[in-house]
Amino acid sequence: MDIDRPLIFIGHSFGGNLVEQAIVSSRLHSVYKDIAESTVGVIFLGTPNRGSKAAKWGALIASAAGPFVTTEDRILNDLQEQSGTLIDRLHDFSSWLFSESVPVVCYWEQLATEYSTRAGPLGSIMKSMLKEVVVNETSACIDGHRKISLHTDHFKINKFYGPDYPSFLQVYPEIVRMAENAKEILRRRRNPKAIPDD
Image 1 (cartoon, helix red, strand yellow):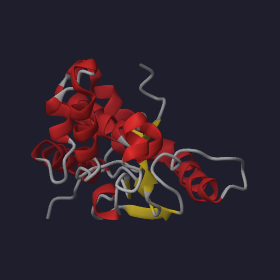
Image 2: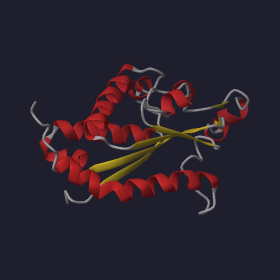
Image 3: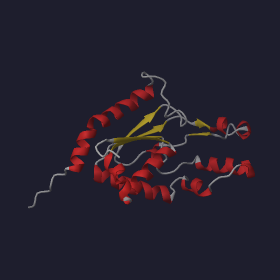
Image 4: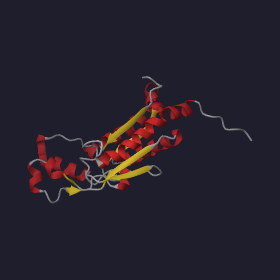
């Protein structure tokens, strides 16, 4: 990996959880440490940092599908609201953000998402029940970091329909800001100033 190349991660939904896990893990394994050391910004789009009530719908749909669909119960449990696994990872990730002064912007959706379109035949039966905000502000946002709401639902929070699209106009400037500051962030991280003795 080119250690002089800055990385800006953009993660949507569970992809954001994977970004967190990759960075936390890279700090523990020297062969991957350049990932964390080269990261200069992170954008989260509807990432359930503290879990989601919607995880229960995944469990319900998986159980209704019966033997035709295999699921990983541990993954669904880890995505429940206030899951210990997610809270522990968020703690480790937040510690890294603080120690490395990495800018983060967390976006969350304002509109409820209609799951019925993704639930196959079961969706038409349960249409009125399968609509809610997937990742609310509390779960999407990391304390002490920039947070912005987008007037969209969970399935569209990472979709931009042109340069004048309202969500794009709120996300793009944050990416540009991170890119413009990237080299300075890497320079400070790699050449820290010594703390003067008293």
